[in-house]
Image (cartoon, rainbow, N blue to C red; front, side, top):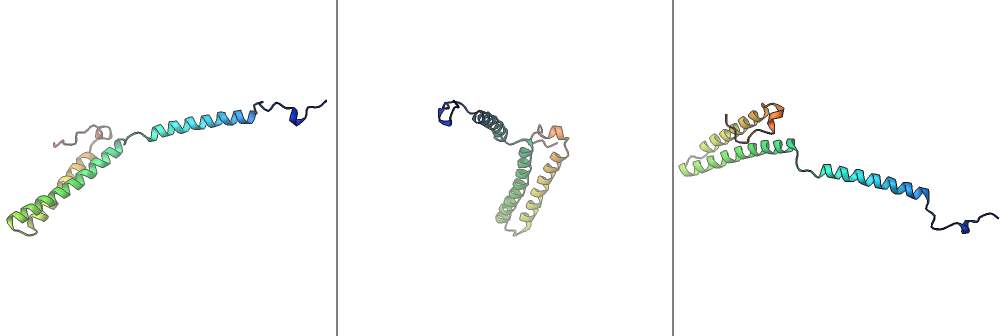
Length: 116
């Protein structure tokens, strides 16, 4: 007598399901590894870029503010504002040039306030 479809054990494990579960587990592990690499903090290049941007913005803003304060205090309208603005920009560019002229291996280890 032949075994009909209804006589099969319903709890019998299907091979397709077990291979699907294995592939799903491998894919989930791979995604966990990728997520672990992505969730790290900023790398050295991002920190260096943020430092350069802060020098540029800080130098220009500090020069502008100091120039405006001296102009207000002394009564000279644009003289000190322009002078300190360009002085602050020059100092910022000098610091950025010093960072960019360092060897690549030493850039991350350089101190932010090294005024040689």
